[in-house]
Length: 267
Image 1 (cartoon, one colour):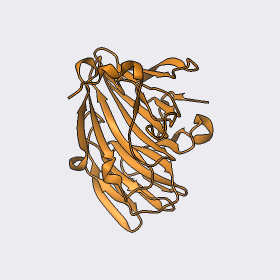
Image 2: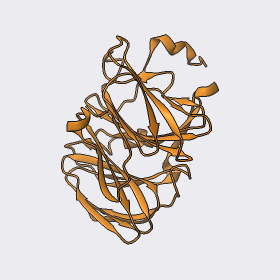
Image 3: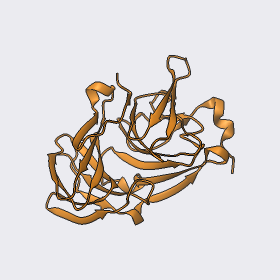
Image 4: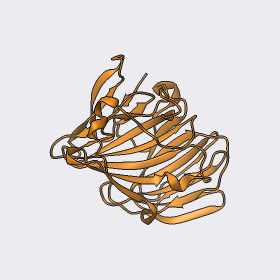
């Protein structure tokens, strides 16, 4: 199964992680890159979708709603995100008011809700960790998604140079249920400057998986189980868009690796 998908420069709509190729049951990722004046339209079918504007400005419409002048950051490191939630069994359209890049994040769904926009001022900023595992985590649709979405949970994480995140290592594959939820996850990385890199670790305690991947600008990674800490290389800022869904609801209760729980500060 393809866990790490390398970036491929492509205009228009690009599929990145599909269920049948990644081994995931609930999640898929694609990306949209349009020039000013271009338009894209699609059906959500059996997916709830979050459109996260990575860069540029767009108008987005769905279900008799239309929102203009959304977005505006020059890249993901230039402020907080704008996102649009589109329910299952819906049509949506994107019109590029400028050059625009949008992540299309999909989670399996059969309950239809109402579309809505999350504006930058509504993104919840969390500063987590300490020492060299301090990072900034932006909640796009987390607590604010209750009774508004079925499964999807989504946000962005920013690692400063040399910093770790998803650390101490955690997982959420249901092995220790009910303490641990059963949620899949996808990461989509960007790096500043773009020639830089980070390291994505992926392991389980029985040594069945013990891997480390070099991740570069535009790469993506599928996480069906296991611990998955991330590190930014020295001198380079590392970002990843993350989104989760599964069969255990939307409660984020990551299970920390017991060997490393001592790193969590006791307030």
